[in-house]
Amino acid sequence: LEAELAEWLKAPAARLFNAGYAANVGVMTTLARRGDVVFSDALNHASVIDGCRLSRAEVTVYPHLDVDALERGLAACAARRKLVVTESLFSMDGDTADVVAIAEVCRRHGAALIVDEAHAVGAVGPQGRGLCAEAGVTPDVLIGTCGKALGSFGAFVATTTAIAELLWNRARSFVFSTALPAGVVAATRAAIEIVRGRDGDALRAKLVENARAVRAVVRSCGGAPDGAIAPIVVGDDARVMAMSARLLEQGVFVQGIRPPTVPEGTSRLRVSVSAVHEVGQVRRAAAAIAEVVAR
Ligand SMILES: Cc1ncc(COP(=O)(O)O)c(C=O)c1O
Image (cartoon, rainbow, N blue to C red; front, side):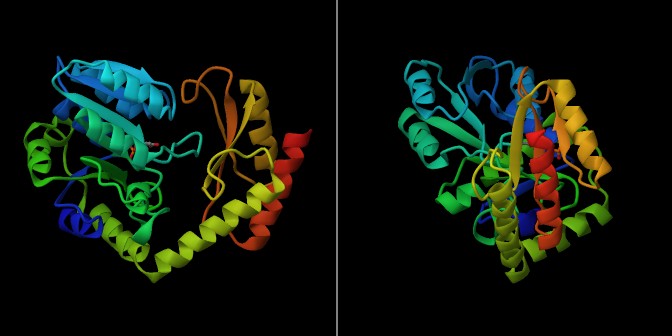
């Protein structure tokens, strides 16, 4: 699977982890240490945050998607080793980082770039290789998960041979955890075959179609216009959960998301569109969501 991942993602090497959480903790703790400075987007996933904390590096959190702020921080930083870590397609907001601009800023300031593509791999880009591939950017480290678009379990790091070997030897979440079972690995291999081929292209086209169809009806959906993550920020925790329950009564499952997953006061319905939803299902779901939002 590691060899297939590397070949699919056009990376020199890939390392398989048991979950995205383990991959992010393993990458951050292996590549960053005391004396280094990590620049981390304010809305990065908890596993990135925990990895940063465990690394003992100094962490500078920059405002969400703010490349200018990131550049100012990097320019003012005298540390020998600087690392920038961001998601590409953000999990709870569905918006995207400008990976081209971030890669350029990293190049100018000698920083390593780590991109978590958990929500983009499979769903976005040529052969489903993610947002960096779509943008023509090769980060130093790309993290993807097998439990989202691939419908399996586990995660991977696509990177240089040297970093892949370093992770094999040093990433504690890799070394001290039993490997994934063969059946799970086989499921991921089968999923990659679908995702990278013609069926994958058709599924991604359908995903975009469904995402647009929902947004055409539910105008308050956020996120990238074509993206599968279409959150509706409501604010109040109890109201969001009541809306989610009301939708479920109608057979429409829209997860309510509260702190600590999202910042206080930004509780939301996280509408998550699938490529296998039929037109009728999408219409019915969108109408139900619009009705609950308008109440
Ligand atoms: C951006 C991001 N990275 C990493 C993870 C963790 O992946 P896993 O569920 O495989 O541990 C998630 C969510 O689960 C995520 O949304």
